[in-house]
Length: 122
Image (cartoon, rainbow, N blue to C red; front, side, top):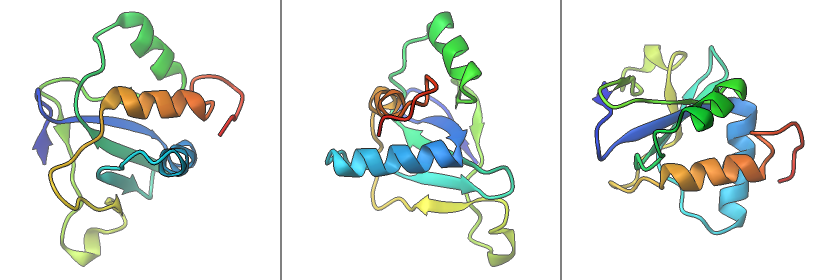
């Protein structure tokens, strides 16, 4: 487990959207950070720098799009190194170092991919 604080945040979204966002970011030359896959729930969690403004309207918009932003003090369940637990969580993009993208950069990519609207644009 990792704790959300002023240096570590998380954004969780449906896996299908997350895959489009990852491809969009790669095509734009934006560096990816660690991404956790949750195969049973078909969701991915992006580990990010927590720079998303605490804005009720933004969080409501994200909620309607099935996107959750981890709040300070929340816990992030990390993949287990034990093979038998891989069905629960695994790395879709394993960490290579301490880098994490800006949460706002990830949300901008979500928006570009239609994650906050009904249209797929990326």
